[in-house]
Image 1 (spheres, rainbow, N blue to C red):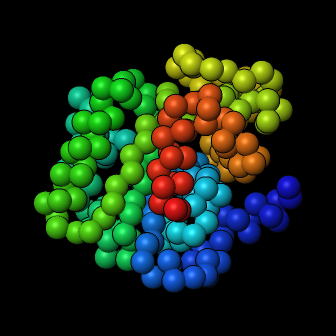
Image 2: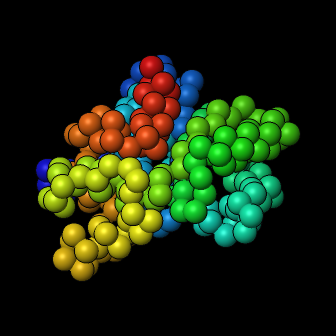
Image 3: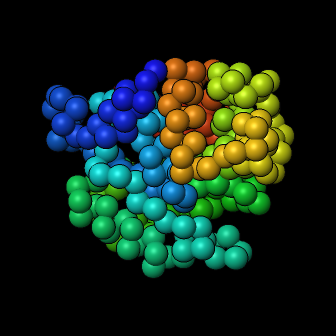
Length: 212
């Protein structure tokens, strides 16, 4: 897999997808970090090729997305949903790091609150929500054997997955540079890695359902 192939996949836009489904369903992504802006579309286009993405992901940093108690900051989310809907999105997938949030307890609450905001805005926007557990780099550790990073890890994963990935890469790791390239290498193995990571499995399930 060459850098040229990865570049083409990153840049692939709506024109790459044919068929009448394009006019019916169009997706967008909301992410937390800079690295996911390029990395997450790779996963979406691999799992959900029939549903085009509208532009790059909308980046909503954690301090704008949630308050210190883990509650959604309503105005920030409303602004994001209204903007994305105005651009033609019919579905949105939100991916955030779980960090110290318990996915089983908090993810349903956050998702319910976000769906409530969409309802109050009266816009037709289907929501998918995923907390990467404990953070995006956890998926790299779950698929470490496919990335040349040693043996894969299964839950419970270390809290500092970024630090563990950095250690396995020999002490050098940049989310902006390395997340897209590592994600690209993981694409052929997503089904296997999702079986090791419940959060990636949730993302995969949502994308596959959208693609069906």
